[in-house]
Length: 170
Image (tube, rainbow, N blue to C red; front, top):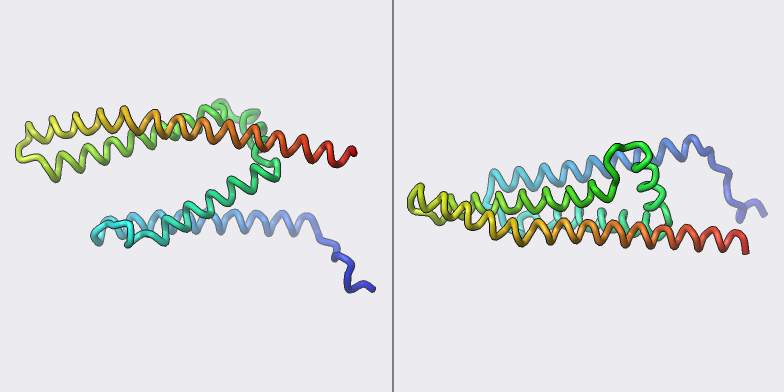
């Protein structure tokens, strides 16, 4: 009845395969971002043109985040990162959200100045107005969302770790 038995796996081989899968994931993400950039530069940018790339990026990132959280790995990753890095993961997530808000504010401000202004003075005033309004909206939004998601994922991951420990003991 060896048909039903699980085969023994070499842990070294499994780790190498997992490393390859991780590299493939990163390659797909980079290629998707390059595709979006090329389409943005060469053809008119619309959501329909780059919808598939955005779906690939968002779904795979969401899947990774949910799986690591519910397997209890996320809190371990955060702990390892915080031990080896000078900047804590929570601070990096907050700074990433703030940076995204600033970049979006700059993009929107530049777009408004270039496309809607009739003179240089009007372009400067449009840029400053749109930048500050976008900054006020998007920096707290993305910074706060990143911080909330990080803390919620870490808390849920710690709960899953505790549940796994309790299941093993009892």
